[in-house]
Length: 249
Image 1 (cartoon, rainbow, N blue to C red):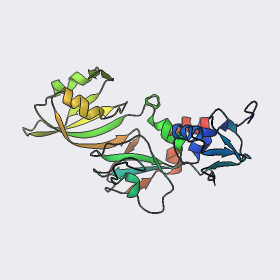
Image 2: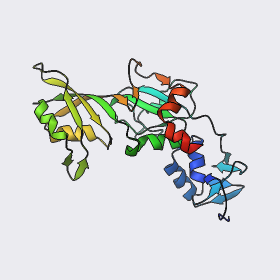
Image 3: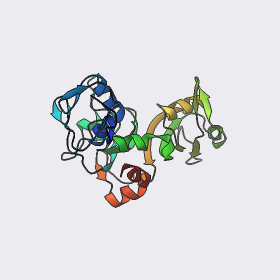
Image 4: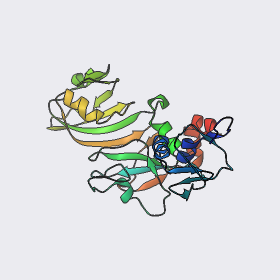
């Protein structure tokens, strides 16, 4: 297929926007020969498509582009943040309430981490909100076991390197000064690398035995019940991610 002067949007972006998957996954699907444009199988994501083009994934027409939506979900501990799990464990998407569109998670929460998880039907929005460049903080309540003090936690302010992995500055504040085996710590970070909190706490000789995400950017877990979903109103969504919608239009 001639890709020169083919105006429009990149094919992977269009598939992601339809809510089927992330742009990265769409590129993999294309390379695997799962995508057709105007009846012809393509194997390179270096193609722009227009509204009038006929796009099919696994021989099924691409769903019509839906309005971008964002949901706040209170993830219980013990669920995997993926659509399928190779070990057959129950996933977030197995337990969502009925009547929702096909959703993608904004980042992931570990199996035993609970709390706020953002879900969207727009793969482009998911990717946008995951980027550290977006500037959104991730906020957690962390219960730790061990000898903890504010001075020790302040060692994270300038960032640390753990087993060759560099973690950017982390704000950690001891919630109370009560003498107890388990202490609660408020943690704010901006990267959200894999198992970041557990690893930096281990670096401080502290064991995490409960981890709850209470905030992501401007959104808070609040009193959303475990397993429940709350949709963000369209005017709030467009105000909070204004640059995304400006670039999208």
